[in-house]
Image (cartoon, rainbow, N blue to C red; front, side, top):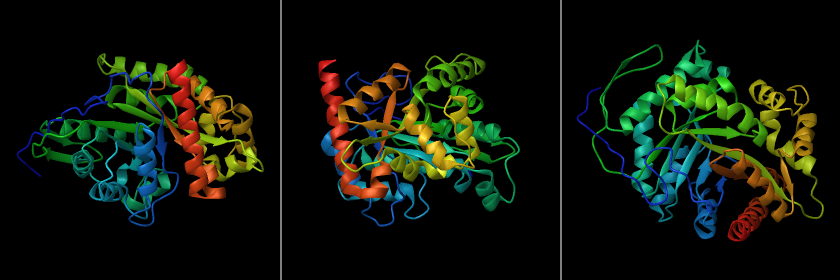
Length: 352
């Protein structure tokens, strides 16, 4: 594929074109949609929540129902344009050229900055799409991210690697900034992210583990890549719920995180962080999330105070995940929690 292009990014207010610009100390957390959208309007209420509260960004993960980028594009077409992020979509589903095209299209349609986060995918998922697992997921990720970033920067890409090939560039268009991110749980992928990504997207990672393990690995990766002049931003998804009569945090945590608590890579990360979790016992893992404070439960003010620990640990963007409440009590209860937590953070920043 050869196309005549340049595709330079132009920054939008409030976000840099690339990583490295510190957010305002008064910036509110972002919000993630915990479930896959299954109708065209499934994200509307979440986007209105972000718009109306001033939350920083609306995130989703990979959807295998209504495709993630199309769901965001539908919102923009309906006139609801907020900054968005994918945390994460899966690399085996699309070539890096198409990934860059999707990300830039979202920036153009929303008129807002975009974080395009990608993940390698579980080995079984990769095998189901490609017929094999990746011999080196880190090499795959690094090649993919470099290609997407170069395309978004208007560069000509001439690459023939083990995982994809490309000779071409994007057709030039000015657009709001797009940051390229990657899912990070453990030090090896953090080193990869530090060398090639704009954003490291972490999930269920305790603040002490981010500060003591992931940030040094990100910095090491930057140094190994030739000394990048900006640190890869960190965006961390944090499970949260407001304490209310009849709510059991252990049930909420298990409901929200059971799928991750049976996965080897998540439980390995948690054990490295000092949170006892084994794939064979997700209920015990959920209890450990609550007892360690990784699942943040309490009054809205308590949750806001706990979120400060992430900022102090070096997290640039906290992403609220109200999945436990959503899956047990429904969307309105989840929206109520998110609003109260965002307002508590706003009060804390105003008087802090």
